[in-house]
Image (tube, rainbow, N blue to C red; front, side, top):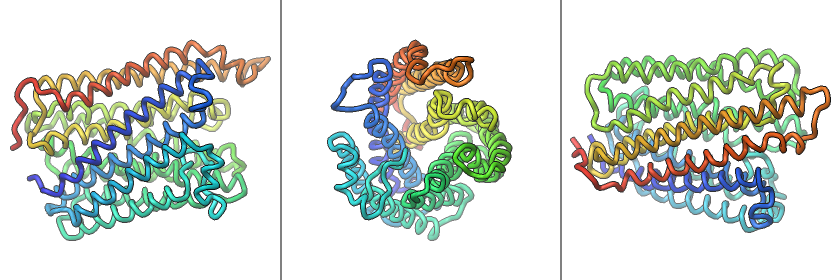
Length: 459
């Protein structure tokens, strides 16, 4: 059953895809600056392009999560959203604040931006991924609280399901751990220690709960498997996520001045972190194999299966490759980290958002699935983006291995820039593959406008 208030998810999904395109464009700019260092300098220096690239990633994924919650929660709670008007108001506030922040990054020197936005009152800027000015951070908190109030009230007045409660737990955790972005101690060790309470406990903690809930919702809808079966899987997955993810934070504490027992805690528990991702892969394939009906939206099914596989490879396998302290000693801060980051973010959070958008957008437009040709185009986009990110990861991994050998392990270690010259071929290959990824993303957007063939009418 469709609920009228689910329509508020549509602008969130559209904004998410628009910002995703911006993120990829700035990624291509950065990739080209790796091989042609003065490209767009001084208009867009590398540090600014990187800041925009990573901030757009975070913001568009949050837009996707919020859109997914506004679509999922009314259906799970079997009631209309508490306040659609509040949801739309927060959408525009979040979008305008995000856009102004990006414009600030691109037009004002970062130090000047810090002075203009009250960083001397409460210093929160200058840290990787948390570069947002103080007013933006405050705005994010206001938007998050209004969003959580809206969906929490919806759940309270309607049916409570495991999926909606796990999603709520993940979203409340996201908001709570973001508060550590306001804590910026002058001691560098303390700064890094608590910085990971946002960065790690988001992407390797509460975001995984959101991922699990979204994937479970889509699998129920496209497979018809009993809710009880899917919920049991979900409980086991989130238990393993929390057990491994929370203590696994220690793999970021190896070399920042913390006690050495973190090398044991971090190594052991982060080595277990691939388990929930592997379980998610088995979960997705198991549910599709046990399906009771053939859903007309084949593309959404493909995205759901791909999410399980790619999150396991990116977050699980590539994370495990360099998570043990004796290995991390050499790999820390190299292109190995970038390889893991690219595939993990794509496999887990990018793909689950695209899964939800692929499933929900046709329904929001009055059909159960897009037309056959549109779905074929969308499947092409899946394979182009997914194969591209695999090759990007492989090229960065090769660059990282060569970088480690030349810069950190050889008998006569090279300087950083000399080592970078030696891995230039891999940077060129990464850039070319990035353009293929962009083609796949354009096809994904285009598939929603493809008019050929008959669309499947909504049930």
